[in-house]
Amino acid sequence: MTNKIKIGVVGTGHLGSIHTKIWSTNPEIELVGIYDVSETRAREIAGQYSIKCFTSLDELIAKCDAVTIAVPTIYHYETAKKCILAGLHCFIEKPITQTYDEALELIRMAHEQGVLIQVGHVERFNSALTALRGQDINPLFIEGHRLSQFKPRATDVSVIHDLMIHDIDIVLWLTKSKVKSIEANGVAVLTDTPDIANARIIFENGAVANLTASRISAHPMRKLRIFRKNAYFSIDFANRNVEVYKIYEDGVAPSSADAETAPKSPAIMLGTIEAGIKNKNIFFEQPAVPNINAIEEEQLAFIRSISGEGEVLVTGEAGAEALRIAEKINEIVIKHIHETL
Image (cartoon, rainbow, N blue to C red; front, side):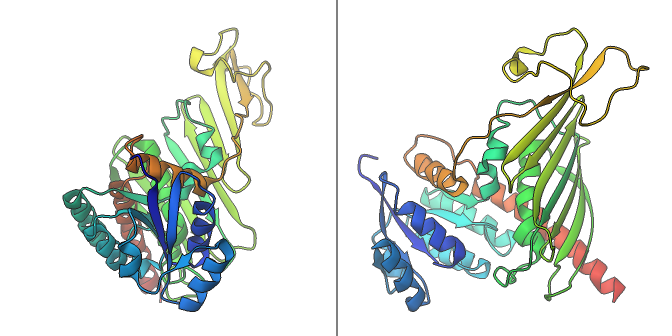
């Protein structure tokens, strides 16, 4: 595209206002304006960033090439459908839709209309995760904890669709294998949907993921621990920190892929390897974490894919698969809750 891509934002709640703020500083695009069913809220946000506030979605659509959809999840499908049928590329906040069937329908329409869908699984762009690019992760076991203090927003969906789905998406992306079976349980404490949940996902390639999510925790946490043969990766999404522990044969140089980050001395954080296991040492690495804004990065990826300068990094299909697994986990948890009443 030679002209600037014209972007609109639909929904000006917490995430919509953040998207609006970041889009307003991007010189590569033209932020056409915003729309929200609450005209008062829309005018407030429009005033902050000196942009136009549209009084109807149709009016905004008519002026745009693409949109960011940040409305409540229950309205994702009908909003995205209208935009796709009008020929607009869509960035849709996660989860892509309320149901897997709705997601499949949006994907079908997008293919027919020749437009792109990117889903807002923002943790894919977290600098702590991007710091591991180039590493041979190949996970065998993954343990995730995503804990949050209670917030009134996003309670229209379960903690599985609100929080755990981030880790579901990352796990699916890392394992690159189909799900074989799922075990799960959880509890509804403050809302009518699960507020705490745990899921054990077993993949066809033998990998296992154990994920816990809670939105009523006193101490927030967003961590993923990944284990493979002779290596352990610890990712702290909240503090944007990465730790890597690897076992090397004593006296054998690290592989070329690890040469730049290879440590000079053994690490003792995980303990010491007993003398019975000869010629092995645990080494500690701490990859440099880039100073980036994850939402800005996913926005840049979106406009690059529209411009043909790169592939969609979190496709509609990826968003739909994460939602499908989240639905299965949610069904199992709800069944468990009903059985224990």
